[in-house]
Each structure stands twice: as C-alpha cells, then as structure tokens.
Length: 335
Image (cartoon, rainbow, N blue to C red; front, side, top):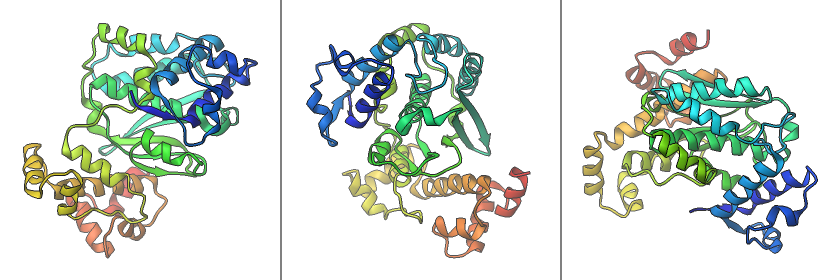
C-alpha cells in the first residue's frame, strides 16, 4: 500500500485531540512512534492511516471526525454504499449517494453537474472554519473520487481540482492525492473529469462491497492503481503541469519519458484508438469548456492559456471540437 504524508496523520490526531482524547489513545496499537510526528518530511504507511482513521470513526462515533457542526454517526457511509451501488450507472450511483447524505446531514452539500462533456463533483461545507487546516474537505473529496473509481473498476483521470483557500504548505502532497491541475482561492471545492465515466456501469457486486467495507478506508485513502492506458498516462502528465500556459511536450520527449521509442508509443496509441494530436485536442477542449463555463475570463485570455497565438485560431479549433464558437458557447451555457 502507498505511503501518506505525515501532514494527514497530524490532522487526524488533531481531530481526536479536539474531542478530548490523548495522543497515546490515538496512536495506541498503530506502531507509530510519537517522534514520527516531528519531521515534516516523514511518510506513514497507508495501513497505519487506515487503522487510525477506522478507530477514530469508532472512538468519535463521527465519520466527519469532528470537522462539522453535527456528527455523522459511524456506519452512515456503509449504508450509503449499499444503497447507491444498486443503480445502473456511475452517474446514478453518485446522484443517489449525494441524495442519501442530504437526508442525513446539512453540514456538507454535494453536487454533481455536467456541462457538455465535463462532469464536476463539488462539495460545500456549511461551517468550513470547523475543519481546521482544511483536512476533512480534502479527505472527503478524495473519498468520493476513490469510491467512484472503485465502483467502475477504473481510475478516473481528473482534469482539474479546485480548492476554496490559498495554496497550503502541503500542496505537493495534494498533487499525489489529486494528480491533475491544481487551482486555489476558488469559489468552491470540486473535481472535474470527462463525463463519459458517468455512463459506465458499476462492476462491483455486493460481495465485493463487503470486502471493500471490511478494508475501509484503505481503498479510499491511498491513490488508485496506475492507469494502464497510455492515453490516460499522457493526459495525467500534461494536466499535472502547473504553467500558466498549457504545454504539451514533443512526442519524442514524451516517448522517452515512458522509456519506449516514439514508434512504439505511436503504435500503442493507435491500438487504443487515439493519437497524440487527438489527446492534445481533447485536453485543450476540456480545459476550454471549463473556463468558458466559469465565465470569468475573456476568450482572448483563454486562447493564450491554451497556447494559441491568436483568438481566431482558438475559435476555429473550438468550433471543430464542439460545433460552437467560444462566444456562442458562453451564451448557451451561461444563461
């Protein structure tokens, strides 16, 4: 199992301390020494984090770990998964899961929305000031991304993640938790991804769910397994870059990054039914749609951020991708 930054261990411990428990009680049985907490560079085995989270849920009788106004009793997540998994698509599973939590709590509002081919899953904490250090907001978003990936048996490649606060000291760890473009000081916390995932059916049985729940939160904390397709690997590589202007590496350098020849990479992409040019266009399209939907930037600014030298070139490309001009798209989806 993967390792996790000590930042998250400290945050979980603090959730317990604020409720009157001692450090010794929290670490008991975990084989973690207190001195581990002293180093900002320390990493903790995923098994240990799983153990401490599971026992914190039971100790606090609160799956929101004291980070909301009203506790969420231990066992609610299990009930949600048993209820939601019976539906026939990932979209329906997520929508039913959101509805389920709306019946239990007003402390966290969730929403799934789709614009064109981009899906957005957002969360809104009623009292974010109770979540000191924003730990649980990140953890909750991580849980739903991991759960959705588990449901369909595929790692959902994220386009972007949005945080409603400044870039924190542990921002590098956020790149591991959410391998995509990071955006801070935003109006809402959310992840975005290709809406095609929402049409996929669940591949998990109720027996799978029993094992999943028995091991929980192991599969919710650590990063899902490597995506095997080169298309997904290339998307992740490009989308995790943090430049203001989108940069797509030369194909030869890209192949070298994967330790294969350019001919081999081209052949593998052809086998997957795609090409480097199409992947780049899809990324530019997805980012353009998100930025136009947000309706906060000019078309010229969006064009420059995607690497177009002039707005006319961007307009022609966007029309080819969507059948709309950028200005028409803004009018359609923002009114």
